[in-house]
Every structure is written in structure tokens, then in C-alpha cells.
Length: 192
Image 1 (cartoon, one colour):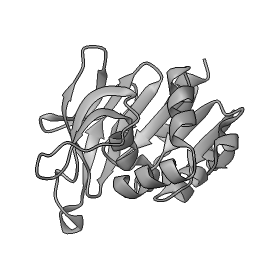
Image 2: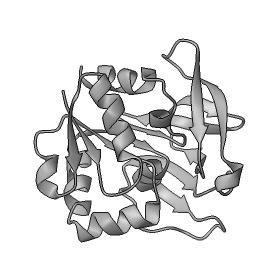
Image 3: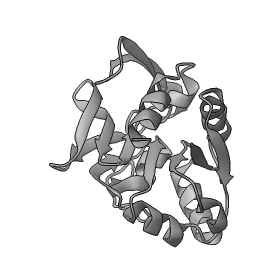
């Protein structure tokens, strides 16, 4: 399977390492031509405002929207979730532009707090046996989901892993957990 990782900013190397360990052919996506021939794409955590600007300046924003609309399987983590969301609220509630509008949910940026409020939590994920180590770093919170969005895991009252068809997103960083099971589950589902 040929899997892309958006490699403009953020934790793209960590995703690439996990995918490589799982036997995927990894492509670092930096320009529109890199989208050709990939079976799935990971949008990493990082700084969502910076990634949005880099998507525009690299010319990737529109081709990426088109590939997702055409059915490309995509998994966004943390900032990647922010990029995929239908609507984003900044820390103080104002609307945040620049999303890919591929996932029917509303998220609030940095809702758990700043870097010093980062934490880990054991998560129970539908379809994954046993607890999964959730690594939350300046994570967004999903405040609402549409009727066609499946919540695969929650922390407290908030969804932390969601799926809408071939679009998956997590508020946490599975690529930093040392646990390959979530990447493996995504790849096995999208390969069918």
C-alpha cells in the first residue's frame, strides 16, 4: 500500500516511521504531484495555522480537497483533525478559516490548554483490543459531530477519535504513543 504523509510541518516523520514499520510504502507529500498514486494520506499534528498557510503556498490545498472529495482515505491527528473539520473555533470562540471541510464536526483549538497541560490517557477504542495510550499535546476538543460521524473513542464527555466514511481523525497523537495498532486498523480498513 502506498501511503502519503503530509510533510509540510509537524510530526510527519513520526507517522512515516510508524507506517514504514507496518510495511507501507511511504511518500512524503509536499507538492501536488506527490498526491498521485497514493492509497491513503495522514495529516499530522503540528501548528494548524502554519500548515494551512503552507497548503496554500505549496499549491496543495485545492488538489487535496479534490482527492478527499473523490474518496481518498485520510487520517488527521491533532492539527490534521483541525484541517479536516467542517468548522473550527479558535481558543476564544472565534471562527477559524482554512479547513478542508471533509469531516462533519466542530472542533475547538487548544481546548485542553497550552503545552504544560499536555497529558496522556488510556483510551478504549472501538475495534482495538485493550487500552490505547492517548498522547494529548495542545489538543483540540471535538464539540459536536454530525449524524454520519462515528465516535470510535472518547475521553470524558468529548469524542477523541472519529470516522466519517474514509475520513478518520484523532485529537491525540497515536504516532507518538509507541503503539502501532491504530495506524494498523486504519490501513486494514481502507485497504478493503
